[in-house]
Image (cartoon, rainbow, N blue to C red; front, side, top):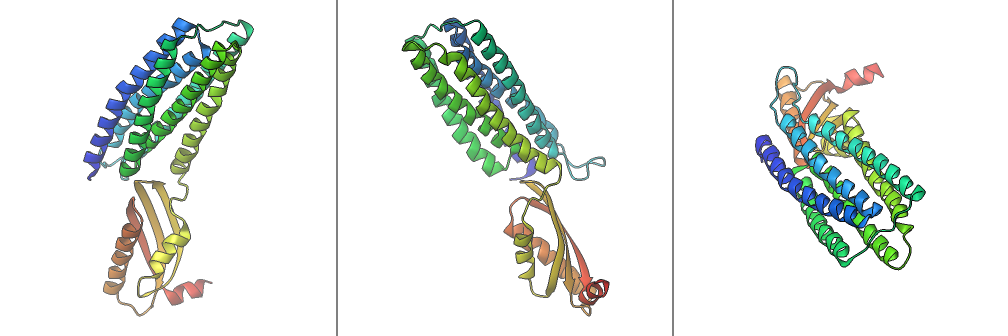
Length: 294
């Protein structure tokens, strides 16, 4: 699949999921407001942040799909990663809002009016979220999309928090209304954990952290006939846009044509062995010159 088709596919997926997330959020928020449940309302805001993250994702994909130009010789793909960072920041803001609401409920308790309708709403939203998470995770791995994988993690926490809300509603029904604000604060932990996961991975990409272990690359390169040694191996980039550069040592009497052919062999072998590699820079050096430096 070419770059343009990939981005178009991701945009279509995000567009459909956006409407599902907004529908799920609306159900939770309306029901939570009607029965005065802090935990259900908090879960509704969590789902609403899913919708906002989809909107941010669509914007990020639109920028990332732009072709290489003079100001961005490596392309615009990292804008997708930057947008994923925005999603994690949005999750942290949701956490702050839920904490504020939870503390308020502790200071001014309100007993939720639990009904069969509230259980039906939560069950429907959980089923929808499970379908979305499985589909989005699969497509995210296939398309190697930070946006889809990040959003799937977000949806996974939504499933967990919705399950907690159902447990809370059962507890309230049996005479334990204090569970409502407690669980709303517990939801913060799941949202925050998801935000940290997204943040760590995106920081690795933006800070040019290692994309592929050095030993794995070295093993592939040294399997090519004519290469004596391999060192100064570096890799960076997103899972779908990995850049590698390395130095290889060859026989000093090797002619230029043969050395050039070996560099192409290295590039092809690396791209065949590791998915997502888009650029390989090979520096050919004579073996005796390296030994002289040492």
